[in-house]
Each structure stands twice: as structure tokens, then as C-alpha cells.
Length: 223
Image (cartoon, helix red, strand yellow):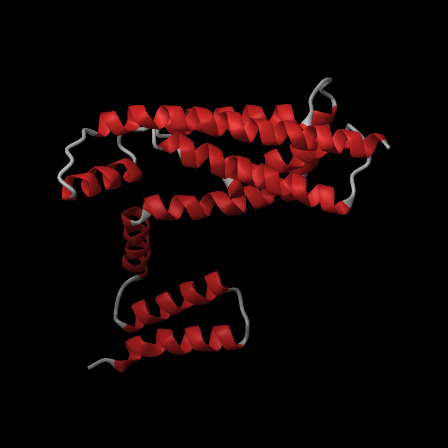
């Protein structure tokens, strides 16, 4: 038995104790174990490639996050604020209502991953909403935090009530299975159709909430 293949564990423990970069530590540990097992460097790199290819659908999600981080470091949020500040008539309520409609529409088509908190709300929607609210006057810190929270809530509501319209979403299939257990036979299309009125009411109710917040911030900042 070749115990040298366990050298990767020693490298990993030592790297974490020294608080080195986790990515470098894991990569070094894998190289150490591979070389100790008699693998060639090309074989080790091929194993990395195969592992990435087998889990590419999960890995792509994590690749997006550092890209967004680099964009934010390059001034993405500031550019978003400048963009919305230059638009006449752009208010917090109008901006978030438009985003709610867009989020619901795309989710209804099954495009649930093209927007979200990490990739859309934090770098774009929240700064734009904040700039739209600031255009009406100076904001208190509590109001600023409420604007950010409302931007995140708008994304949640748009996704939650929009995705049920898509026939192949997991929630539709879950409801279909539950109904069948109760002896009620329904087609997924029927559930999708009946999700449309709920989505419309969600749009109206949350749109009214956004309108009220818009009015309240306008009155407060006008004082």
C-alpha cells in the first residue's frame, strides 16, 4: 500500500493552518496526491478537466460570482446609479415595477436564472433604485436600507409568482404529484394556467406597495 498518496491531506491541513489561499491549497494537495500515486502531470490535469466537465452546470454558477465582483470593483454600481440619475421621470416605484414585470415574464418562460440577488439585484437593481429614490431628495439611512430590501423583495416576488406559469418547473410537478396522491388528476398545463391570475394579483399588490413607498419617500424628502 502506497501511503504517500495521503501526502495531499498533509498539504491541505498545512495550507489551511497557514491560512493560505484555499484554491491554491486544494490544487497543491491534489497535485501532491496525484504525483505520489505515480500519475503524470498530463493525467492530473486531465482529471481536473474531467471533474470540471462533469459538474460544469454547478461550476458555471460559481464562475459568475467573481466576474460580478470584478465588475463591481470596476465601478458597476456607480455606473448604474449614474444611468438612472440621468433619466427624467425615473422614480423608485416605476423602476422596481418595471423590474417586477420583467422578472415575472422571464420566469414564466422558464428563464429563472437570468436574474437574481447576486447577479442582478446587488450590482444593478439596488443601486439604480437607490439613485432613483435619491433623485427625489436626501434619504435617511433607514430609508436607504428599506429601498435595498424592497429591491430584493421585488426579485423574490417576481420569481416566485412567475415561475409557476412555466409548465416544466419543479413546483408544478410537485403539485401535480401531490394532487395525484389525493386522487385528483390534473395536467401540468392546467396548473400553469391557474397560476396566471395569482401572478397578476401579485403584480398588482406589490406594485401598489411600491407606489406607496414611492409616495412616502417623496413626501418625507420634500420636507
